Structures are given as structure tokens and as C-alpha cells.
Picture 1 (cartoon, rainbow, N blue to C red):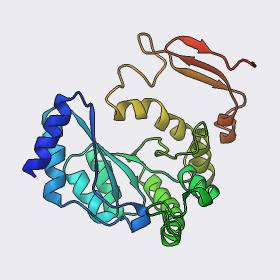
Picture 2: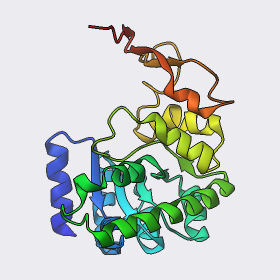
Picture 3: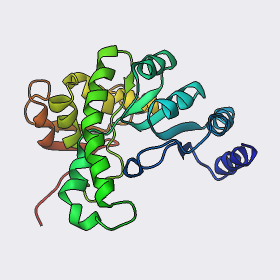
Length: 243
């Protein structure tokens, strides 16, 4: 724990805003717990003392319970956990960034490019398929609680750049999330999870003007998010003009 605290202090000195740790192994290795409760507490407590936010790669009830009780701000993936963990996330206000569809679709669609690299083995792909099914079931149970801060994200997803909108569709169409809740998860709630709710994520005077417009109504047809026709970043309109 002392060594971990020292690492957090070094990151702070280097100008980091966020500390990410891996409390669990890759889902392709079963997502087993890698860090002790004491180690998790050491990182999160030190980061909090220094004003840094903490996000944790974690799977399973044991890992998520330790992360939440340590006061870490956010959980990446999650995937499988008990109803008790759901209640604990709601109680502590922990942000959850699950990855339901795009992550797995990209891996399976590009299987031949990944297979044989590290833990991208036949067994690893079988574990991902299992995780995809479990992930939807867990997501639906989490939605029932109604008080868990679910934010939007897609993981790294090498090879799926420019396809972020697809995760909206997976979450709403297949996961059962309310369309407006999905949009809020990617805007004001996401900004709040980053500690930037006073700068971005909402259309308000003084906020950065980061806007997109789509054709259609995503509240009626979530696939409308694919139809981006207008992009403004920090008040500047960007156009994809033909060359």
C-alpha cells in the first residue's frame, strides 16, 4: 500500500487528473480480482486526498464491493455483480460505465485480426461471449434500481473509431435503457463524473458550446444518433466537406 500511495503522489506531481487502476484481470482471463481491499483503499484514499478522481477496471461482486467501499468515484465495465452491489453503488453515488455492445461486436467482427494476440485466444473469445450475455442481464437489473449513476463509454475499442453512437443503440434497444437517460449519460452525467459539470455537458451560458444535431428524434428512434448532421466544438462549427 505504501508503494501504491507513492505512485499516486508521483502521478499527481506529473499533472494527472485521474488515476485508473486494474482491480480485476481482463474479462478474457475471467475477470478475477487482482488487488487486495487494502491496496484498493490505499490508491483511492491517497487520490482523494490529492483531489484526483479514481476510476477502476473491475468485474465481479467482490472487486466492485471493495472499490465502492474504498470511495473510488467510478467503475469501468462491472459486467457481473449482485443486487447488493447495485444498492451499494446507488448509496455511495458511484459512477458505472458498463460496455454492452460495441466493445464485443468490434472484437467478434474483427476476430481474425485479434486472435493469437496475448489473451485473445479461443478461450478468451468464449469468455467474452459469456460476458456479453451476462452484461445485458446485469445492466437490466441495474436499471431496475433507478438510482445508479450510469455513464456513457465504449472502452478503447481499437478498430471501432467513429462508431461510438452504436453503443447508444445497444443500451436502449437491447439493454432496455430509456432513450433520454442514455443521452443524459453521455452529456451532463458524464460531465459530472469527470468533475467538469460546471464547464461541459449542458447547454448553458458560460459553458463550452459542444453540440451535435441529428436528423430524426432519438427519443422515438434511438438509431437516429447515427445521423449526425451538425457538429460544433467549443463554439466552432466543423464541416465534413467533400474533397
